[in-house]
Length: 163
Image (cartoon, rainbow, N blue to C red; front, side, top):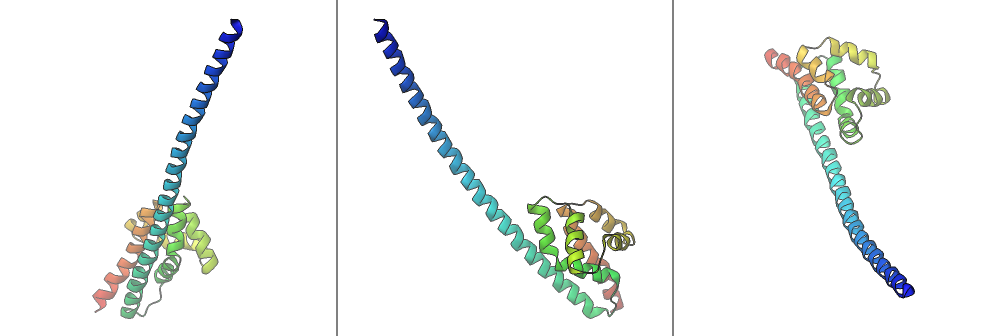
């Protein structure tokens, strides 16, 4: 009798464990599907950020070129704007997708592609107006985008007043 009860308990435990394993397997498949969807969504968002950064960089390049047509000056601000715009999409990519700070990413790319050092960049920014300084000091993507836009505004004001 004891053998039958023990055997019955063993069979019940086996069925219970089989049922739990199947339940866990279903849940695992659901989580795998969610993770896969999350990855594809994240990849799509990353691609969109990069495309938007390229588009914004092109708009800023056009704005800079238009401003150059109105002024013959080649100031350090124009050189900095040109350097930042040339590396705009790389910097946005690092900040948005790799969680780097704007200052580190800017320093990395500008030292590779131009003769600007971090000290020179800091000195140029220190001579700018307070709004530009504040945008730069935010050290995030929003501040960087704003900084690049504002960096060209004083040039536009100066060049349009010369007309």
